[in-house]
Length: 139
Image (cartoon, rainbow, N blue to C red; front, top):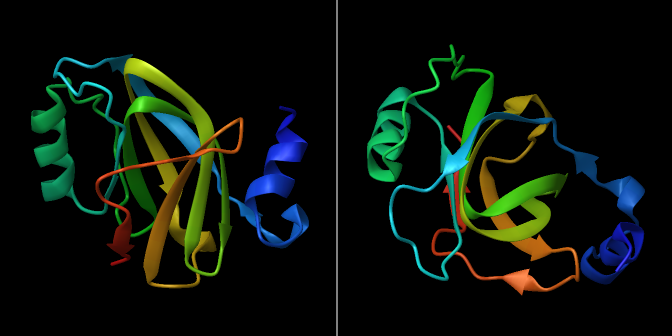
């Protein structure tokens, strides 16, 4: 399905009414832990959570300097985030299931205007994919 058509299928409002979040991939590697048939997307907002996630996913720290006042980090396992749209308190991610992939991205906080965020995960066919943790409170 063409991306434009997926937006029409998934999004409640016209795509121009959503903010495209600036996502920068800072690390991509194969998972060293077994998450069979499960997508995990984890929003990280401080150094303690970041270090815990690095240890849990058994990934080498990419050694980047993170300004926690300006950025959040998103760990995505078994799913490649390729696009993000934001409106009110919902972050819509679009991408592809990719078994064994770990993607770590940085997203700027400056466009969020609500403190409670809901992650919604979709593939490019417009199917919503289940994740274990979906709701986060922005610090």
